[in-house]
Length: 126
Length: 371
Image 1 (cartoon, rainbow over the protein chains, first blue to last red):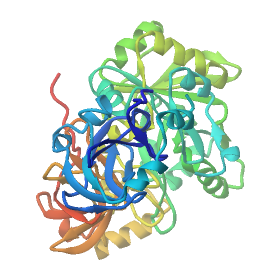
Image 2 (image 1 turned 30 degrees about the vertical axis):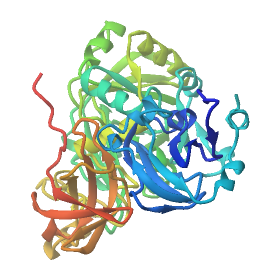
Image 3 (image 1 turned 180 degrees about the horizontal axis):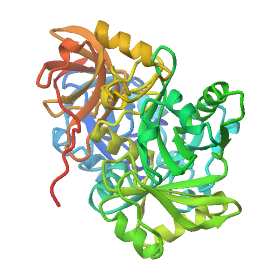
């Protein structure tokens, strides 16, 4: 499974990319592989307050619905509108076109609790 | 999930793992839920052929001079109307006409029958049957569930595959059953032209020791392994009920919309378990009716236990639901008041607090294109 080296990871299989004060959130390659065919995505609303570790979005495969937990606390600034018409982007390009939402972090210290690529790779057994 | 140590294992488990299956618990069994993906497997069965391990299902043979009379009282269909080598979908009801199980009964000889029962309620079914056996020894009942491995070969190309692998096998007609191969170790290998997908296909019953070889020969013939996930979406698109989700001891076959299998419309069917309760319910009116529903907007996949609303009021909840891979829409079944059962009735289904417009459909949800 792909674990890009420029991202940080949550134990619950989300990734973040921090660029300035904008943080992009998505699910990992490992997560999409476990979930299989993703047929529906429900991102948060723009302006929503999200909390680290709390449910921010839902993605659904044919078989099951899965909660996506926000890796950081803050305010949602943008959601990936392409997912509503093409939720399979979460499977085909989880670190790129399959991003779920962007947010402004309200507590930058939370980033330090997230896993490094090495630690996340170890968690998923590779 | 129940205690992993108590899970029952199919004789084909090693073959599933070799095919990259994801295994899940289902009705006390460890079973493959998918291999390449539910969407893909679903579409293969609709367009060519797929195979499902159905070894978790139970096989029961009933024989003896009293078999027919006893089965007539146990099941809703008119067993006496079945010709030798023919099968029929039927129901086993309790005194209140609650559904113990839905099953297929095949007549395999003059006085012998082969019953295929649901995997999740094998023990319950057998207890019920044994407790209702006549005491005069005229009926012999044998649980052969652990002696058979079973594979459902399903899809429009199934006949082609079967006849290429078993050129000397007499291919049964729809709902028929015949011998697949010579009897081994006292257990006949059977092939029935039945299934749970809405496609042409066969259910193959072979001795446990021959199960893996059958699986591998089908695999070599290009048949795609399919799991319980696709089995569920395929059956739901057809509106076939699943015992435990859509059928239970709390609902009658009339409520489940299975009127034509309920036995009470056949003037020559005698008394059977549940008959009086069915007659009474028909006279008094049904409290509910299993209703097919479809979202009218694109929305999340439907699942069981979602609230169904009429004019803002919760009127029931879904008992089965899925995203239909063939239609691309959310589909579901729910027990609703008969007043809400008319096709076209506008309802709503609530998913995570949001309400999505839905309409009452007719089954099958999926209408097969002409081929």
